[in-house]
Amino acid sequence: MTRRRWIVAAAAFLAAPVLAGCAAGFDANTNKPYHPNEAAVLIEQGAYGSRGIQIPQAFILGPDSGAQIAWRGSVPVYLNILNTGGATDTLQSVSAGSMGEVKLKAPIQLPSNELVNTGKPEPQIMLEGVSKSLRGGETIRLDLQFANAGTISLNVPVVTRSREFKDYPPAPNATAAPTPSASPSPTASEEAH
Image (tube, rainbow, N blue to C red; front, side, top):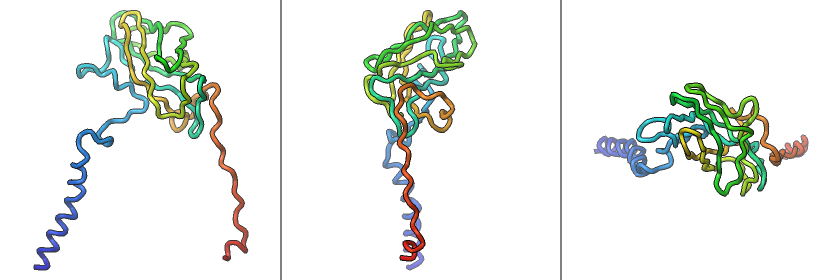
């Protein structure tokens, strides 16, 4: 009888993680993909891209970790755009609704089947006068107006200037991250107590 109880207890113990995972359901946060720099919204009807435009990378560079972009500040927008259409297209304008005004240095030419990076050698797109302070982790909806493809909307994440983004130039007017203050180390007499 003891052996049977042990087997039942072991089976219940081993089944608990499986049953707990089922309780989360299909809408659990762990079941949702998170791509901080992918423009996954451009998947339409099971195909990648929209009207001949693919954007494999899109992000807004926010502040350093622990810092913020102040209200009315500016942030650069980085896009990699691939025009898969047969003719050259042009990114004419970008808007961000009530989040601020987006300025292009000039219309961005998109030759057919050539990846264009809007951030090199320096950002060509700036979101200015942001309507709220940004710390990173936010998402801003951008409407991109193309000459041929029309308007394409996507949700672009605000990423902190850390990890793989640490070598990008800082956003203008970003507040500095707080620096940790040095605390005195205990003396030998304090450690003895």
